[in-house]
Length: 143
Image (cartoon, rainbow, N blue to C red):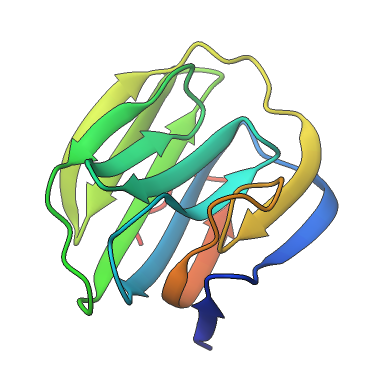
Protein backbone atom coordinates (compact mmCIF):
# COMPACT_ATOMS: atom_id res chain seq x y z
CA UNK A 1 0.00 0.00 0.00
CA UNK A 2 1.39 3.40 -0.99
CA UNK A 3 1.28 6.31 1.43
CA UNK A 4 1.49 9.87 0.15
CA UNK A 5 3.17 12.42 2.42
CA UNK A 6 2.46 16.11 1.79
CA UNK A 7 5.45 17.54 3.66
CA UNK A 8 3.56 18.09 6.92
CA UNK A 9 2.57 14.58 7.96
CA UNK A 10 4.17 11.22 8.80
CA UNK A 11 3.36 7.92 10.47
CA UNK A 12 5.01 6.64 13.62
CA UNK A 13 4.91 4.23 16.51
CA UNK A 14 6.26 4.93 20.00
CA UNK A 15 8.07 2.42 22.19
CA UNK A 16 9.58 0.60 19.24
CA UNK A 17 12.73 -1.46 19.90
CA UNK A 18 14.92 -1.14 16.80
CA UNK A 19 16.74 -4.43 16.04
CA UNK A 20 20.52 -4.68 16.21
CA UNK A 21 20.53 -6.90 13.10
CA UNK A 22 18.11 -6.32 10.27
CA UNK A 23 17.03 -4.88 6.96
CA UNK A 24 14.80 -1.97 5.96
CA UNK A 25 13.41 -1.87 2.39
CA UNK A 26 11.20 0.70 0.71
CA UNK A 27 10.22 2.26 -2.59
CA UNK A 28 10.15 6.06 -2.64
CA UNK A 29 9.14 8.72 -5.16
CA UNK A 30 9.66 12.33 -4.06
CA UNK A 31 7.80 15.31 -5.48
CA UNK A 32 10.94 17.44 -5.22
CA UNK A 33 14.49 17.12 -3.91
CA UNK A 34 14.79 20.46 -2.11
CA UNK A 35 15.34 20.92 1.60
CA UNK A 36 15.95 18.14 4.10
CA UNK A 37 13.58 15.19 3.67
CA UNK A 38 13.91 12.23 6.03
CA UNK A 39 12.54 8.97 4.62
CA UNK A 40 12.50 7.13 7.95
CA UNK A 41 14.17 7.35 11.31
CA UNK A 42 14.40 6.13 14.86
CA UNK A 43 14.31 8.79 17.55
CA UNK A 44 16.87 11.38 16.52
CA UNK A 45 19.73 8.90 16.10
CA UNK A 46 19.25 6.97 12.91
CA UNK A 47 17.84 7.90 9.52
CA UNK A 48 17.96 7.88 5.74
CA UNK A 49 17.65 11.45 4.51
CA UNK A 50 17.89 13.53 1.38
CA UNK A 51 19.03 17.11 1.26
CA UNK A 52 20.20 19.42 -1.50
CA UNK A 53 23.61 17.71 -1.54
CA UNK A 54 22.52 14.09 -1.90
CA UNK A 55 21.23 11.02 -0.13
CA UNK A 56 22.64 10.11 3.29
CA UNK A 57 22.77 6.91 5.34
CA UNK A 58 22.87 7.20 9.12
CA UNK A 59 21.47 3.78 10.07
CA UNK A 60 23.42 2.10 12.85
CA UNK A 61 26.27 4.55 12.36
CA UNK A 62 27.82 7.40 14.22
CA UNK A 63 27.92 10.24 11.73
CA UNK A 64 26.48 10.32 8.25
CA UNK A 65 27.71 9.02 4.93
CA UNK A 66 26.89 10.63 1.59
CA UNK A 67 25.65 7.99 -0.80
CA UNK A 68 24.40 9.59 -4.01
CA UNK A 69 24.95 13.13 -5.15
CA UNK A 70 22.12 13.25 -7.68
CA UNK A 71 18.58 12.19 -6.94
CA UNK A 72 15.73 13.04 -9.34
CA UNK A 73 12.23 14.08 -8.39
CA UNK A 74 9.24 12.16 -9.79
CA UNK A 75 11.32 8.96 -10.10
CA UNK A 76 10.76 5.72 -8.20
CA UNK A 77 13.78 4.38 -6.27
CA UNK A 78 14.13 1.16 -4.31
CA UNK A 79 16.24 1.52 -1.16
CA UNK A 80 17.56 -1.17 1.15
CA UNK A 81 19.63 -0.76 4.28
CA UNK A 82 20.98 -3.87 5.98
CA UNK A 83 22.79 -3.64 9.28
CA UNK A 84 24.53 -5.87 11.76
CA UNK A 85 25.65 -4.02 14.86
CA UNK A 86 26.52 -7.23 16.72
CA UNK A 87 28.72 -9.54 14.60
CA UNK A 88 29.84 -7.81 11.41
CA UNK A 89 29.52 -4.22 12.70
CA UNK A 90 28.42 -3.07 9.24
CA UNK A 91 25.69 -1.02 7.64
CA UNK A 92 25.16 -1.48 3.87
CA UNK A 93 23.03 0.68 1.58
CA UNK A 94 21.58 -0.47 -1.75
CA UNK A 95 19.89 1.74 -4.32
CA UNK A 96 17.86 -0.01 -7.01
CA UNK A 97 19.53 -3.30 -6.10
CA UNK A 98 23.10 -2.01 -6.42
CA UNK A 99 25.37 -1.87 -3.36
CA UNK A 100 26.32 1.77 -3.01
CA UNK A 101 28.36 1.62 0.17
CA UNK A 102 29.17 -0.44 3.26
CA UNK A 103 30.31 1.33 6.41
CA UNK A 104 31.48 0.20 9.81
CA UNK A 105 29.12 0.73 12.70
CA UNK A 106 30.19 1.88 16.10
CA UNK A 107 26.85 2.04 17.78
CA UNK A 108 26.00 -0.57 20.38
CA UNK A 109 22.30 0.24 20.64
CA UNK A 110 19.81 2.57 19.06
CA UNK A 111 17.44 1.60 21.84
CA UNK A 112 13.72 2.05 21.82
CA UNK A 113 11.60 5.05 21.06
CA UNK A 114 9.74 6.63 18.17
CA UNK A 115 10.05 4.92 14.79
CA UNK A 116 8.78 7.11 11.95
CA UNK A 117 8.21 6.82 8.22
CA UNK A 118 8.07 10.11 6.35
CA UNK A 119 10.34 11.93 8.82
CA UNK A 120 12.83 11.31 11.61
CA UNK A 121 11.59 10.37 15.08
CA UNK A 122 11.07 13.91 16.33
CA UNK A 123 8.97 14.90 13.30
CA UNK A 124 11.60 16.99 11.52
CA UNK A 125 12.21 17.00 7.76
CA UNK A 126 8.89 15.56 6.59
CA UNK A 127 8.99 14.26 3.01
CA UNK A 128 6.91 15.34 0.05
CA UNK A 129 6.22 12.22 -1.95
CA UNK A 130 5.12 8.61 -1.88
CA UNK A 131 6.49 5.64 0.06
CA UNK A 132 5.47 2.15 -1.01
CA UNK A 133 6.16 -1.39 0.17
CA UNK A 134 7.99 -0.36 3.35
CA UNK A 135 9.32 -3.48 5.08
CA UNK A 136 11.52 -4.13 8.09
CA UNK A 137 13.12 -7.44 9.06
CA UNK A 138 15.11 -8.51 12.12
CA UNK A 139 17.39 -10.51 9.81
CA UNK A 140 19.64 -9.64 6.87
CA UNK A 141 17.45 -9.92 3.76
CA UNK A 142 17.75 -9.27 0.06
CA UNK A 143 14.67 -7.19 -0.71
